[in-house]
Image (cartoon, rainbow, N blue to C red; front, side, top):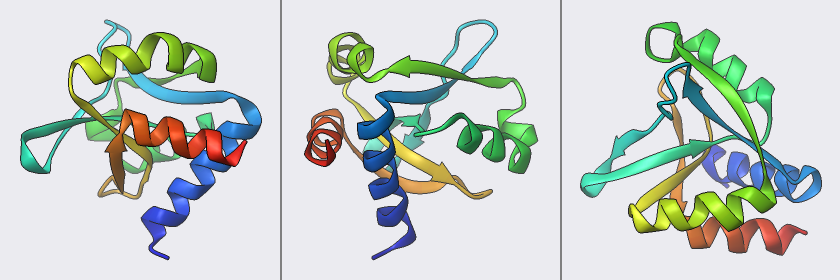
Length: 118
């Protein structure tokens, strides 16, 4: 299993237990997003605040102005997921390392995976 798959499985497990996930946002309200292959955009999510903080320390030039924001799983499913789907966003799960490596998948796949772990 690749390290990205391992981190993704940890994400599914932790979010299914805690019902909380995290994203990064600036004080101005801009959420962190990345351009990915195929002209798509990825909205990264993490399963813990500490994962976001660790990544900020590794990438202060890129992520210094971003802060972790907590959202409930229910809010993600009911409010954020439809918005991300409408905008054709992918979701990055538990990105890590200085190169921000991880797995990008569809919002629908993310929901299915987390719920399969519940």
